[in-house]
Length: 142
Ligand SMILES: *[C@@H]1O[C@H](CO)[C@@H](O)[C@H](O)[C@H]1NC(C)=O
Ligand SMILES: *[C@@H]1O[C@H](CO)[C@@H](O)[C@H](O)[C@H]1NC(C)=O
Ligand SMILES: *[C@@H]1O[C@H](CO)[C@@H](O)[C@H](O)[C@H]1NC(C)=O
Image (tube, rainbow, N blue to C red; front, side, top):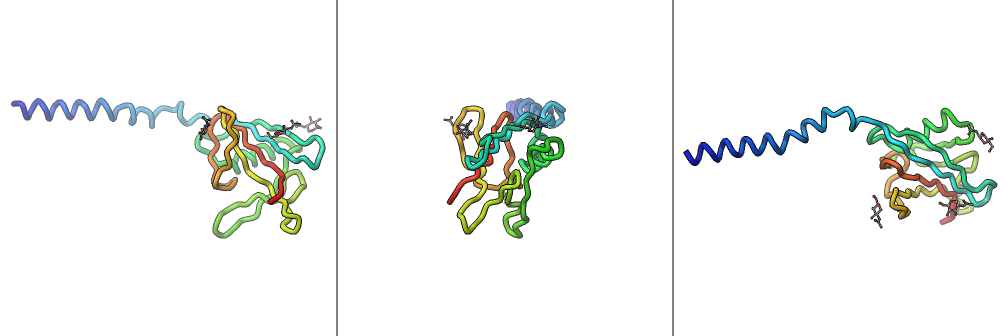
């Protein structure tokens, strides 16, 4: 009897605990896109900062959001090259390309809502922005 009760109880607990997970997956809310902004920062040109806004698909990659901005705003253009091992690599933004001889490149930085600037360890083809992230493309030297 005690065994039966505990089995029933564990079935109940499992159902109770797993239900939210199951419902979460079916919840269309979670599939919603969310806003991010993109800041292009190049201290060698004027204006040095340009900001763009877009919506990114749920768990979508940064590259997708950048293509979306490029498609609708002529003030943002970029090019990438495909690295066979690491995927798309950002080469130029708004006509300015990184140059190995001059030790310049486009650095990818992200400023989440809390304001701390972080440097993702992946490129534009793999980075998945969080809602309300400000993604910073910074022309800089190494
Ligand atoms: C441009 O953006 C950078 C990076 O967020 C910031 O440090 C800098 O103060 C900004 N410059 C201007 C003129 O807004
Ligand atoms: C592009 O930049 C120009 C000059 O800053 C501005 O007048 C124009 O509104 C911008 N275009 C878009 C689509 O934001
Ligand atoms: C800010 O948010 C990022 C990502 O969400 C996190 O990694 C970082 O630790 C946070 N920083 C602070 C000071 O809370």
